[in-house]
Length: 400
Ligand SMILES: *[C@@H]1O[C@H](CO)[C@@H](O)[C@H](O)[C@H]1NC(C)=O
Image (cartoon, rainbow, N blue to C red; front, side):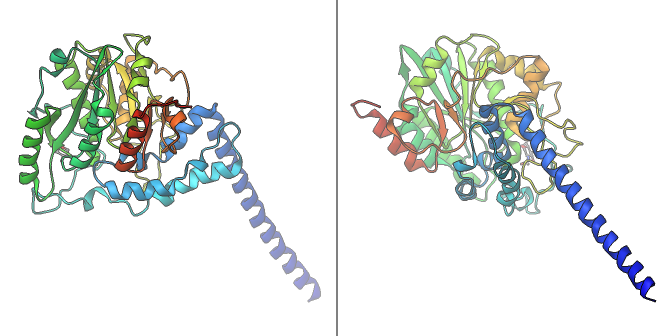
């Protein structure tokens, strides 16, 4: 009897041991996976970019839910980005938080669509209706010729976001000439889908008549259509702005140092040139809860091709036509900057890292006159920040 009991205990403790073993092995595997992830992102700059990729949702969701954006952005603190050596805790944070951040964000089906009574249901939620022939409802066909544009800034913005457009017009968007070079500015808008779309459209026409800085195309303006927006931007550039040297796609909540942008571009290559915050070896997110979830059916590789984060990327104008051509052969994904990266890969053209890693910033940079006098672009926490920072930078006196 004693012996049997002893044996049973032995068996039980063996079982527990095995449990513990598999737990340890599992932990080791998780840590190895994290290490691999860090190692492939070999230098601090791309690491930073990759953090941005992980948190990309925060920076992509501008058109559809601007308020959520500010909330999520508050959660993602810049301190999670460490330069140089990345400690395991940072890694864990980087990997764990996106899911926390992403939960509760408006899903495509909950976005209200005013046009049809029944909620719109896509056949495949990751399907992007591009290539397709979209046309312009509001156009500025002669803008680049008339202004003899050097660099054209294209700002995708939602139809109702007059506040962002006005903030930009009154700040960095007002800097029209730098070093004798013309900087042109255009807001890119799709078709309003909200309840008050008719009124919105009337307001837009009036706004366009006043400022002549709006392009509107006839696709539905929604988060999952941002790739269409970018493609339409490229189509417009290649059709109407061939005389310009460069273009920049920049988001509407960004601070832009126009002078530094022009200074970057003056000596830059005139062809096959694209720069910004370049992400390399960024992992495709396969967690269905992630907002950047891409199923294998939409895109099968483990990593994205190199791409410049959508917050603000710059490219030589020749690329507009080339990218449109490539887009006919590349299956579109709804993550617009990744899609541009895929087209660049198709073309076999590499992206250029910016000369300095602090020029483009995915996390809002705290205001510091010296720092802001040196950077090119940074996300901001509010439109008021854009206005206040820009005004301060205009006042005379030393920067540093
Ligand atoms: C994107 O725009 C196209 C064209 O207007 C439309 O058919 C489609 O429903 C839109 N998709 C989303 C997700 O809004």
